[in-house]
Image (cartoon, rainbow, N blue to C red; front, side, top):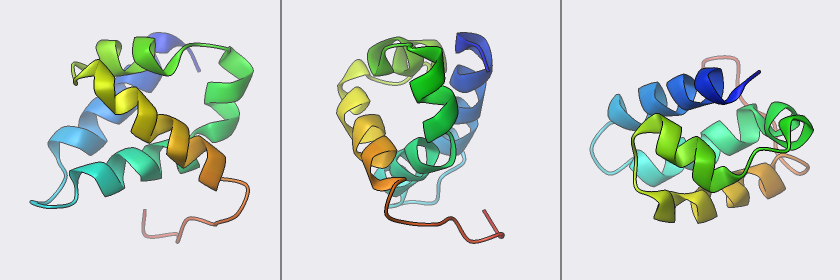
Length: 77
């Protein structure tokens, strides 16, 4: 996955999140796409910028990537 694709995925998850679930959706993005994020070697800030969200959320993306080793995403998501 390239920067544009990752940005589109994150954009959709961020802007379609229910009220109060935005940060959880950013973590979920990091969990779901951890392998792609790691293998692409793109910065989390660049992904946030491409998604059109504040670059400060790069920290939350990173938390999701780190959590990916410990959790599994339910099929619903």
